[in-house]
Length: 86
Image (cartoon, rainbow, N blue to C red):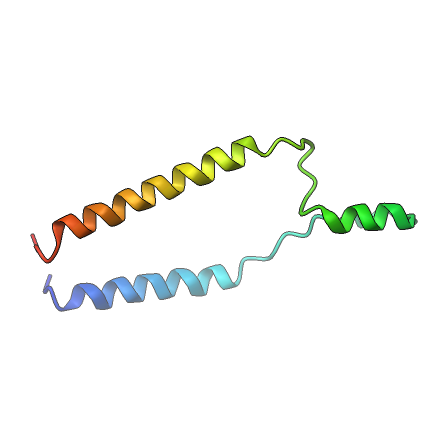
């Protein structure tokens, strides 16, 4: 494959992925079956992002940090390789 075509193919793949993700429905953390709610319940619901069943956010912090480390590793690897093309 020509080296000149690689950026075009990468951009096309990224654009296709973003376009496909545009059609993924968003998730709403609401309970549609509950009809009556008090003011306190509405205020409490506005302060939470989603009901996960546990107030422990440690797994999310560990997972997010792991993804950041892996991403930084990929960036470092790309910078070390520089302009070398195999």
